[in-house]
Length: 189
Image (tube, rainbow, N blue to C red; front, side, top):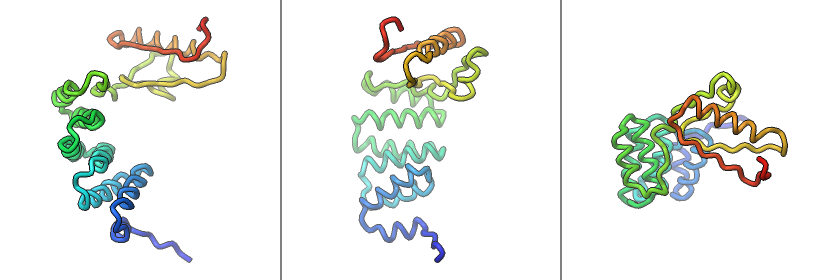
């Protein structure tokens, strides 16, 4: 028996329930099929145009597809419905910055509560570690505004690695504010 490919259009016709359609769009998004996910979110929004989660998710998908102006429009529509939602504001600032509209991104970040502001404008800027940390540059490159977590058994050199990374950032990028938190470490570390 051969498998019959099912198009998204057929799925949309079969899924009369908007909740099922939203779930399917989310599954497509998680699977990385952003084009189909965008189409499914748009179909869902025809039934429920004021659904903030769908507008926001559609914005995320459109950013992944590089369609920043469309993403900005979706985030702005979501922001009209829920004006004080910081996640929508942060996503809107990110879409502005990725589209090259840095002044609008900075203005949007300034309107957010201070505890919700994240360094987004330079989050895509890669940090160079230098010759001593070449392996990190190749295998796990670091960027501005990035958080990291190192998990390993005791006494294998996590702290030494962190010190070397911090030293490389301090030497190669003196403008960066560096914060390192060692959780549940021995006092001598």
